[in-house]
Length: 111
Picture 1 (tube, rainbow, N blue to C red):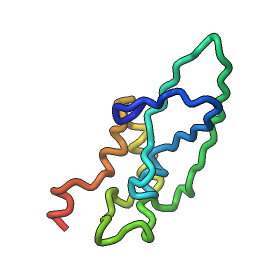
Picture 2 (picture 1 turned 90 degrees about the vertical axis):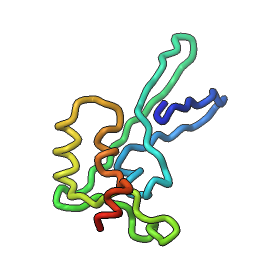
Picture 3 (picture 1 turned 30 degrees about the vertical axis):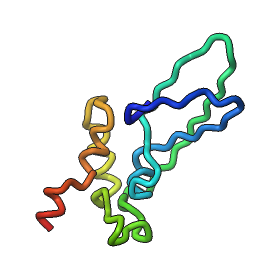
């Protein structure tokens, strides 16, 4: 799974995978993953996909209550429309769109 780790089988487990927007909104507290699935022909598996899309004229960024001096913002704030334009214009290359929004050391120095 994403970030080089793999979950071990947990009997009767309920697993929730979140997407990039929730990672941004939680300021990295919850990490999104690249969805990968292995089909097992011997055991039943149930997957339910649900999506949340913010208003097109809104913004995506870390929740202000999750930004502190000890835990500064990890992601830039961006308009929802611009976020989706960037997301759909990239090829399927891992988490490249999330990485574009990640605040890097050189971004902090230029503020």
